[in-house]
Each structure stands twice: as C-alpha cells, then as structure tokens.
Length: 460
Image 1 (cartoon, rainbow, N blue to C red):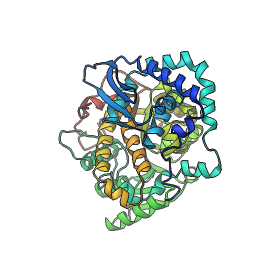
Image 2 (cartoon, rainbow, N blue to C red; image 1 turned 135 degrees about the vertical axis):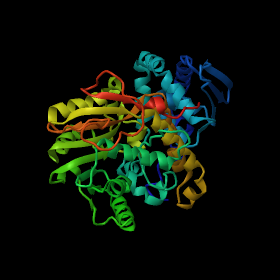
Image 3 (cartoon, rainbow, N blue to C red; image 1 turned 90 degrees about the vertical axis):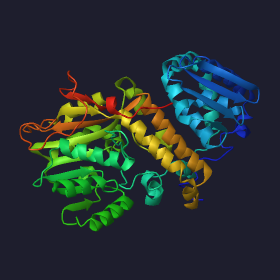
Image 4 (cartoon, one colour; image 1 turned 30 degrees about the horizontal axis):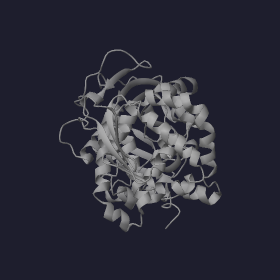
C-alpha cells in the first residue's frame, strides 16, 4: 500500500486509544447526546449499543438520516473533534449511515444551534480535546501518510467519476435531462461566451485541468490559447488530447506557476484554481491576473466561495478538506475577492453569477459515478479507507452546497478600458445564450445572476 493511499485505518482513532481516557469518553458521550438534542430541523436516528434514539424534528422536505455506530467511542471523538472527528471515524469504518448527504445537510441546517451549544461547553472540552490530540501521531512519516498531492492520484482515478470531458469543476444543468458531460460543456461555453471570445483573441488560462476549457475555446471559438498547470500528469494528458484534436498549432501548454507567467493577453480564464492559491497569496494572484491583461482585456474567474460571515474563521481552520483532500487550499468569499481586486488590481466586477446549487447536482453525479465503479477503484489498488474518504468528500461537499453553506460563482472582471457587458450587447454579433434573468440590484458594482433558480431539484 502506498503512502498516498494509507490515509487512515480502523483503530487509529478507535476505542483502543480512547480506552486510555475513560472519563473523557463518558463525559464526551453525554455531551454528544446533549448536542444532538439541539437539532431542530431534520430527523436523525442514532443506533448505538445502548439502543436507538431519534433526535430532531421532521423537516418540511422530509430530510432524515439513520446512523449506526459500530463502537460508541465514536461519540467521544465527534464531541471533541467535531466534523473532522466524524469524517475520520467514518473513514476508519467505525460507523455507517444510510444517507451521508442527508446527514451533512441536517448538521449544516442546524449549525447555529450546534455551535452555540459547543461554545457553552468549550471550557470543559478544551483539555479533553488536547488530550486526544496528543494521542495522534505527529512524525514526518505520519504527515506524509496523512497529506498527499491531490492530482498525483493519477488520471485513471479521476476518470472513475468525471465525465468524458474530464472537467473537474461545477457543471451547469441549464435544461432538464442534461448529462453530466453536456452540463460540463455548457459551463465551459458560458465562460467563453461571457468573455466574448473571438478568432483574433489570445486567451490565457490559469489552471489547465485536463484541457477541456482550452480545447473548447480553440475549437469552438477559433482563438489562440496559452494554458498553464503545475501538475505534470495533467500537462501530459492535456498535451495528448490537444494533439488528438489537431489543435497543437492553436494551444500552448505551459508548466509554470502563475507568478512566473509573462506577456499580455486579450482574455484570461481561471476556473476553480484560485482556491489552491491560499489566502496569503490572494492579493498576489489578482494583481498578477490584472498585469497579464491588455488595458481593454477581460477575465472570467470561477471560484468556490464561502459565506462572508464565515470566511475569517474558516480561513484559519484546518478542516477535513484541507487535511485530506486539498492541502493548503482555502475558500474565498465574494467580499474577500472584491476587496483584493480593489486593493491590488485595476480589475472591476462587471457581472457575477451564482451557480452554487449546480455544484450539488454535479457532486451527486460524481458520487454516483464513483459508487458504480468501486470494483475498478479497488483494481487500481485503492483500499477501503481511501474509498470511504472519497465518498465522505463527495457527500460532505454535496450537502454543503445543497444547504448554501458554500457556493460557486462566475465573476466577469474587466480592465478599465473594457466595454464588455453580459448579456452580450452592442459589440457582439451573437445572441446571448438562453439562461436565467438578471436580477436588479448590485453587488460589487455588478449585476448578479442567480442561476440556482434553474438548478436541478435537490432531493433529500
């Protein structure tokens, strides 16, 4: 088993370790029951060795979940480590749930009540949390096992759940019955249309992925594309796809950090790459993007975002995603991006579209795709804790987007001399694509399109 796959194993946070802290376990278990007693919307059924209890109240949308503990010690870990403890004990196989996404939605929906209860008891739980934390391995070898480079998992792994376009970002389901691949291309095409791409344009893409954006822009809009990535595997895959499409004369793939890019371009696109930059480099990132554009240039930035009210706290917290899936990442808020733009660049927000609920639908399809190909995952050498970790990742994110705790936005950013508008008007010969209406009002001097009104219905 490789270090990349050896993420967490049963017993590492199980009763064998908690047996050293019997008082901790008893107190934390009582606290966990008190915490669950604060649930107000959504019904959670908990099955333990002591029996079965139902917490919460029926939700208007019927949201409910059943959790079965294989060891009651799980409650102590969750009480002391919160969502990260829940994730780690699930990965370790210490509990099961009939609907993980529904469970996440219930907890997010009741987050205010749960956090208030947690704050009341934090003085008592702090020493217990520190005691448990001291039991966790901290050596270099343990760190290497816990943290791996996300994209070093291999193209074969990501192909298990992505659509054939290999698009690893939020799709847009703008009509009923769309496949995931159709919705991914619809998202890419909307980004191209917002930039009003033309054959004479030179487009810079920061964050190549597996090449779907660059290929679509060059093939469908006739522009030249320079795209950059720091993932060698993604670069090699993109090179191959570009040659197969016969677009080698129109697309250049670089393997450079965004800070090392040179030149000026007509248009710039960056889709869900800003999250990997990290909060300390947010200003550097937007400043560099502005410098890479001509005075009349435009940028399409797509970013996962967190509610402004939770940004500062989340920025410094190491959660499940930062620890196991995207080390070093962060989620910006719209205000954080807007503030960085104003302080560090001459870019202004010309339009903002919220597509967050489409991400819940995207993640649901990724989860279903992955679940249907578990035998292939095991054939790649992936063990059960690794598979459970990724199932948790899909469900955790799906529930978070479904409850609007996180969202996803496309921001059209304009240089001072750029007259581009969306929907396209005076200087575009093509009609704007069909889509949701633009609401009145302004956000950071922009019209805001709420395309979540057209997102697929979310079932519990």
